Image 1 (tube, rainbow, N blue to C red):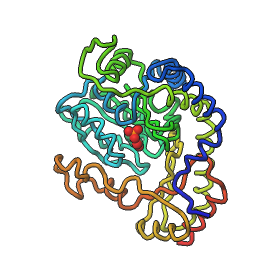
Image 2 (cartoon, rainbow, N blue to C red):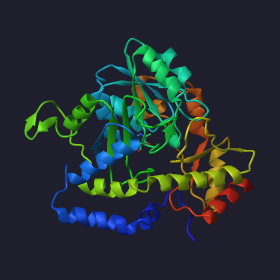
Image 3 (cartoon, rainbow, N blue to C red):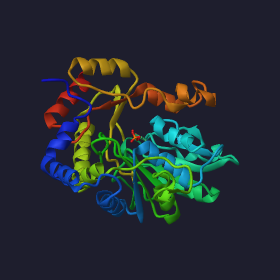
Length: 364
Ligand SMILES: Cc1ncc(COP(=O)(O)O)c(C=O)c1O
């Protein structure tokens, strides 16, 4: 038997193979591959699923974020508050629109700490970007109250939280605009790159549709400098299949997480905690350990792969060196970067595989 890998995309395909193959053939035979009926159908069902009026597909999650930032009016020099412990694409989405990410500390659930917002508001602050990291939703009631008080927009980065509720609403439908990635490993993943923006705001929606298509509404009449960032018909059709099963897929992840919660018994290892009032759809199951690298080595020797989300926080990356933030400037974020470890979690993981993982962890 090979190693237990951190993800098995092949199992996600096999499970609904016939439906995926039928959808792919339908698109191949249709003779229409970009901006057509498949995309319209997916956009409609995804907006219904999330609970927003509109959804616009685009090329990937990073584009969803940058187009959303542009649509809500982020421009040169505007500041957007975002948690330090995120995938760098969250920050790059802000930068691509000309904005400046202002990194702040997360709470003990790895989500943006609402208490960190007000101390970081300046005259240039335009928005807060909330990342529902690893699949757990942030404290949206508190964040919304603060943003309302200060007239700040909320962008939700839902690349890891498809289908997760915060209170009575699904992530993506709470702020002003929600951004999704459909990268293959995501809870709702396609078979290539894909992304979408959801919103109740018609103006933002129309602007995204224009920006994603060379800044044009009417073919060859270009209103502004746009990009080419479209969710193609093939990905849209395959996503419609996966979306019809998303609830069962998320339920399976939760059951796998409950098994880990129950079975991991090692005082050196901290398992994730789901906050009361939040939902966790376990895009990743992230543990923490002071001897993280030794634990990863040990697991590898027992045939268990792991991955670190993320080893270098964006504020310490070369890409953001120009912000001038030094090591030690975000101690909680940096502590997380040094201690987090994601263990195998995916659609189709078996109990036996999970048992191998937990036994190896407990043995450490
Ligand atoms: C939190 C977060 N934001 C943004 C992205 C970017 O998505 P994409 O890879 O589709 O550009 C990802 C995933 O890759 C992510 O995890």
